[in-house]
Image 1 (cartoon, rainbow, N blue to C red):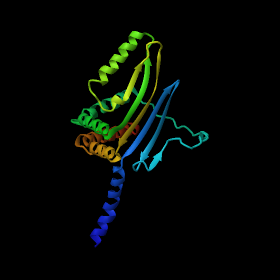
Image 2: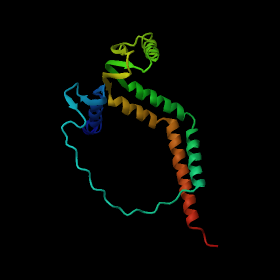
Image 3: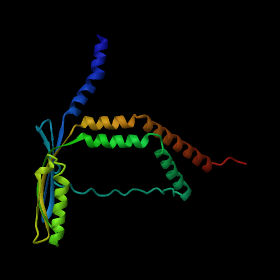
Image 4: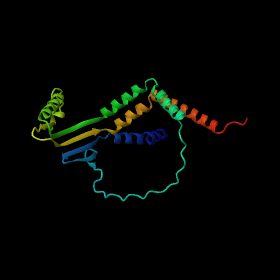
Length: 220
């Protein structure tokens, strides 16, 4: 009985948090470029039942008066100490397997975002009609051969008579927060990262120890 109660108290909140983080979050972006670019963004959660739009219906708050604080004199960092910090940072970056873990983290984060909708229509023209044709040909050469399903919904119309760039773009990007959290946890608790953190802590501890011994020299 006590075991199941303890299990419910410990595991229950973790399961609830995991389920909440597993719900997808959609970022809806609307970009309009006519005279002045305007970007509108809103966030949808719980399959669209909860919508949050930054700055919607909120009055601008009055800027708070800056509080005057007594500035404490900062210790100047010498060239030797600055170079030592740079050398320590480079040495930490040389930790075996660290850059591989960074690459894995970037790939996992990118894969966590999925483009669900992408629609756009633009009119582009350069001062020289020849350059406009080259630009339009480059756009087609990049988008048509790959046959990306979403990029086909972005249409570009060339304007050969005047220089212009205007249009509108609508995009919906979906992400599951649990995938972001999981990617960061895998990175933080990987062996190369833990080695790098240990090396950084040891280096900083030795530097502070030397600084204290230099500040309080032993009496002759």
